[in-house]
Image (cartoon, rainbow, N blue to C red; front, side, top):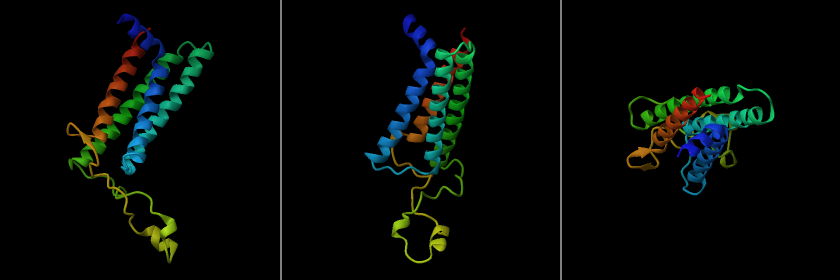
Length: 168
């Protein structure tokens, strides 16, 4: 067990990047295979994992290929903050789904299919789209929506990142 923790400590930047890839793959899998169209808040949550992946790549490079000794710790702290942001955003989305608070006014749907439009393009662009609402729960497991699971996972990733940043 101690060796696993030691390896995790040494390679968490890589593991966090791989976890970000897995979370993005899962989101795209639900979209493509499951047919669950993402709402605006779903896309914002994905952006957090893209950011975490980019930070992981940069700081893995700094950690392993330069003599910048604090790269690992700084990278872990930045990842921790990103994952906290992801948790807050996902928690906000879950709250919108459970009707605890209102979602953004722009969250009534996705992008319209412009190839199907006829008539005035500017008028069509100003009409509300018919995509998924941020307030709907398209999928849940054990009563927890995808946004809820994302909040839980992001909390765990943030906790690990901050815990490992404290270690020398």
